[in-house]
Image (tube, rainbow, N blue to C red; front, side, top):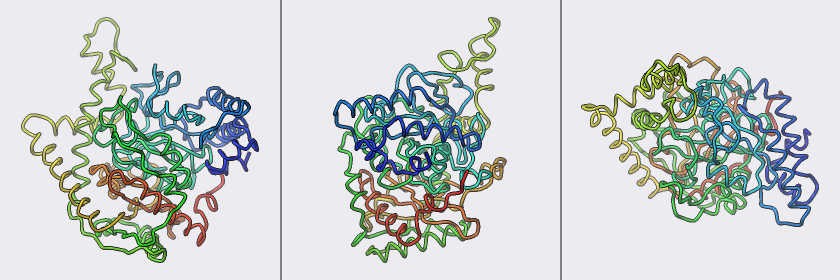
Length: 497
């Protein structure tokens, strides 16, 4: 079992295709791993044992019939519990959807199944994807496999923890302000936020519609690219879906190079609040890029300093609109419906009982920002800042091919450390938010351990919209050079559970 769960997704798929392993063997090994360690980690909210084994048997049957298998056929995956899955629960980490079983699959879920990826179950997350630590889940926090007293990032901490604890070789996350990249950074894994609109949002429970983006999570750059290729592509069911070819991400991951590329370093992505060990590892990564033939260009993007403020007006405003559908009448939980109360009273009681504190905070912030007399001063001004950030990126990408930065200002902090300080919690997304506001593509990959606490540090790579392949080209080059020089931080050094 240990040998199987340590394989990359690419290696696993190759061994299944060759007949060296069966999909059932691989699935059973990961289900056994979940049973052995997830009581400590709490990465999963729901494990679909029977469904996963049925999918695995179907893959083995296809191979036995001589049918051609896809590049990820039979590979297990952990799916963030924000994508609808027909027949198994989708809770979005909230009590208001506890026990809800959707009657349909999200487009992303359908594409995974069509590619014969084996879905092991649904992973824990901050409620409605609102948070940076997975402590806002109504079902309890997830632990970071590097140190179970630390957070695994958020909102997709369940997916990142499943990877880092070898419960799955692949996972899916969503990224509204950094919720794929920040968990990847603090768990020593790879996470990619594709260009906005590159992966369908149909069937993904909405938090902030102009920011939300699903994407791949893995332990290697190539694995992330293989998964990216499966889930991306135009979807007529999603009005924000881009009708454009999927960039050649797998090809880029297989031929990684930065020789002759111009790599930007933004001065706003360092300074006060950044952990010394994070800056040290980032500076080493920049020197590594230089040694691989990249030209380093200093960039000044002044509007990035306003990104956090703009985001925490735009995202709550959109969430206050999107979450209005959870009224206790149509689906999900219902509280106080004893025949004596009006529909309005039932809705109020349901929301009081069903929504957690962070969700209520953001709904109230957003409703206030959108209210008459305040719209222009708050939401309208934030959208103007968003335009300034987009223009800063446009000017930057006239000078460079990609931008690099630390993914997070610090390594994983202790569970409970920032629970009573929302502003300190929000600062975890300082480096990731500008990309969501502009809609660009971005990746986080491991760049070593911080010397002061021996916890993973992430390197963020940002590319222009629809140039997602550049992420993989640079990421693969950095990963290969890093592994050659220092070894893979996760595969070599992750603590035993």
